[in-house]
Image (cartoon, rainbow, N blue to C red; front, side, top):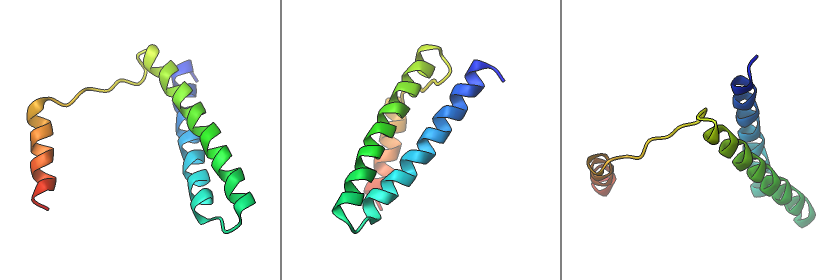
Length: 81
């Protein structure tokens, strides 16, 4: 397994953990439990951001910016709904 594949796996796993912690935070009925989940979520989001930045620096996670026509189409689509 190469470095890119390892980083992709780390990113996907971290995103999954963030999802679990978010639901734990939302669903907790006890303030102490809520606080623990919330802190774990913030730590995990920070880790996810670090992994994304490293991958982006290496060109392993690229994104493209939508052009004006694409943005207009999306605005129109949701403005009519």
